Amino acid sequence: SAAKSLSFSVFEETKHWLRRHDPFAAQQAPLGLANFQRKTVGSVALSAGLSGSISGAVIAILCCPLELIKVQMQLARLLNRDLTSSDTATAASKPVGALVSTPAGTLQGGGAAIATRQLRNAPAAPPWAASNLSVLREIVRRRGPSGMYYGIGLHIVRDSSGTAIYFASYETVKETLRRLTGSDTTGPLTHMLAGGTCGVVSWLLIFPVDLIKSTMQSQVLKPKGAKTFASSLQCLRDIHSRLGLAGLYRGISVSLIRAFPIHGLNFVVYEWARAHICRLAGRPE
Image (cartoon, rainbow, N blue to C red; front, top):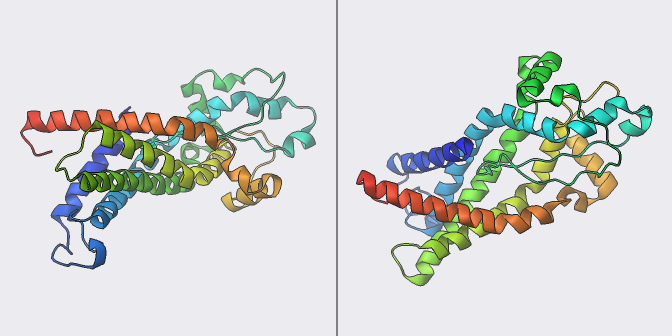
């Protein structure tokens, strides 16, 4: 909740800052893409995309340790299987998948449902997975303080690009529907349609990056001898060689099914709350 609130706040403040400090305000380029005055659909998309990118980067830096802990908690039983397996070679030949979500998810949320192998008779979770704090301590013990930001590069790429797509598609669809209806304002139905659309679009475009990021972050507490990837490119090649292009979208159907109603409702509530807060504060909506 805190991450999503901060994500929307940074987005809105950046959007207004760009409009106030727009160095290209007097220029009229084709489609209005040269400025941030939001008088055309193109300008709305550009403003929302850049503001969303900045918002996503800020949230990624602040929330990377939290999401890293979440990934380890979700995969604790699988990681312990690698530790206790007597057949190290077999365990090392099958990299563990990951489960995650994003903030504006942030997709913020923080997250994405990524399919993992179903294991029979999986061992109990390791002792370090007793709580979030114990996971944090184990990461610091094995990797040092910098271990809390393991995979931060991919995290920033995912959240900055994903949040840019998320907000840009939402505001573009909302503005397009407003113009088509000839109205000066937008209502809950428009917000629901625009929010649902942006949720689906952002997942379709960012899902492979999220898969690779989560798989890389799942390595932070893997035991010695278990298979790990030296880089995100190696991880990408491994997934593609084993599962093909479809492997990069494995599990996306679950995310898409829930994306439309969840993100649609998210923006309905957001726009309603924002309108009431602006009226109480005596500010224009």
